[in-house]
Image (cartoon, rainbow, N blue to C red; front, side, top):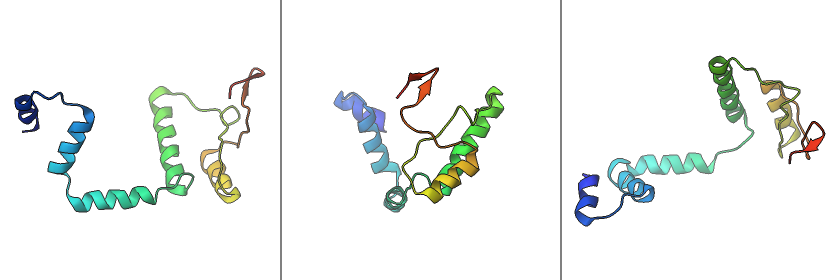
Amino acid sequence: MIDSKWAAAQTVCTWELFKTEFNKNYTPQRVKLKMEAEFSNLEQGDLPSVQVLKHGLTIFQQLWELIPNPYKSPFLSDVEPATKALISSCLGFLEGELPMRYLGVPLI
């Protein structure tokens, strides 16, 4: 299919070409429109995104048996105070500030 088309044209299959061909042939227009709408409404710092982050940290803990230290793992944010409180209560981390330091040396 896609491979033989590029082979016949002697074209290198780049990621952009692959995505274009794949979407054109295998992704229905209604799915594309739905994904675009979801992406345009995406927010960082809302409860679902914080829950996804919490889930990722839980998986990390289970796989590696390492637990992030909430006192050494601050989060940085530019969100409303209520959202900061939500992040802090859900994750257990405190809000940090810049410049971040490690052993007295500024990291950022």
